[in-house]
Image 1: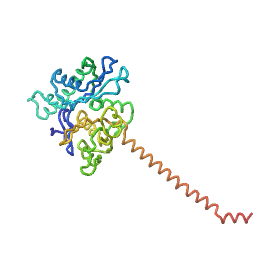
Image 2: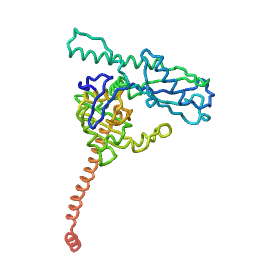
Image 3: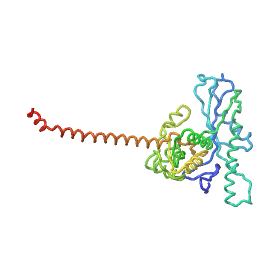
Image 4: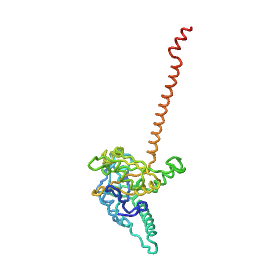
Length: 345
């Protein structure tokens, strides 16, 4: 467990949050499985596929990796008899959590302690990125032979684990889209979206099993000053993954955090990317999804509120402005004036 500031935290170390929660490092890989013979209708043997992948990680890499079965997930996809020739037969993910082998760095006694620590962080970040790239290249396109049936794997890093790719995406978004949070004319993102978090970990104990705004605020304020916060049950995640993932509606929550400063947003997204959330006393690790907010949730909601308020004021103003005119018209043609005109005629 690291005691250093989280904005200088290497990707191989954990970070303690409030409420007994800890961000723990991982390398997560998503894979998709295709039969090399498109006419195959035999379902993939999940158990044998797991054993083959575990054996590969232990024997075919420069540093042997041990992955528990719980960190290797495989899901069959649909009815093989109805699949198209180019469709995959299964997909899954691997989480490699023991990254201690990356911490073996050379000593540099001629560098002062502060400089050495900063240099070590940069060295670890590079080793982490290089090793992740290495394992993706080793596994992507590899073939496995299971009971005479050959399968090919497509392997990739999840979008929410690739901080550099997310950074490039938001830079292009604001550079070419000319929109976003702006201060001093410069447009930058400031909001993070997290999905797939256990609701009960953000609930008030003995009060409710639903996520609490107060508890959530105390947890994420560890990462920076918060401007806005939204917490809700992530029912959409359950609907999206209904056919392939065993997710029960109401057990997961979606959290949207808007930070006061771009620096806090940047550091928070970087430390949340490539990590899982673990609760003290629980063996469960939540492999959430995280990304920056492209939809500008809080800006759009604020604009909608302002527009509604403006329309209400306009409507109220029109209503008030009509009343004096009607009153003036009534006063100009009072009953007495009408009688005087009639008798005069």
